[in-house]
Length: 179
Ligand code: NI
Image 1 (cartoon, rainbow, N blue to C red):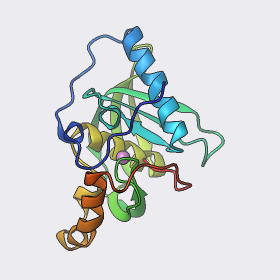
Image 2: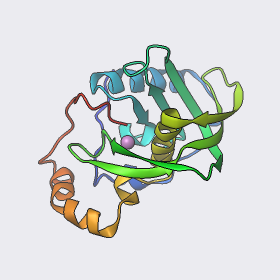
Image 3: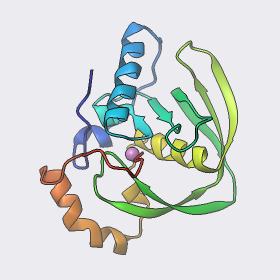
């Protein structure tokens, strides 16, 4: 089942997210629908608030960019540390259609999370996957990538953001592999 992707201006993107206490059939169905929704929009990452669920969960699949990659599910994730080194990359987001901007982020993080079987992991992650995880994790923390931009940059985007909030600009699949 495809969900409607919630875009800039929707309250759910700014709402506190809840831990998932039990990974039951409801959660498995939600995850399956999130992958379906993400693939339909040609995204490579999607967080639960983007499909109107205030839960601490996101999914990632980088395989369109890297054949060795596959589906990744992060339940109750916690970024436990950030490395000092940072890099820049032009990000986009399915919830902020048509806008792409350079965001500076740490290149290395440590993250703990559970998978769909409830197994816990503690991992050190680098480079592009670390960036995508940070973008999706931000969604669980009510943060959008445009929040990281300078106030000057944001003021330049004001008109476009207004059009997204009013529904004048809508989500469409793009070849940019949005997060
Ligand atoms: Ni996003």
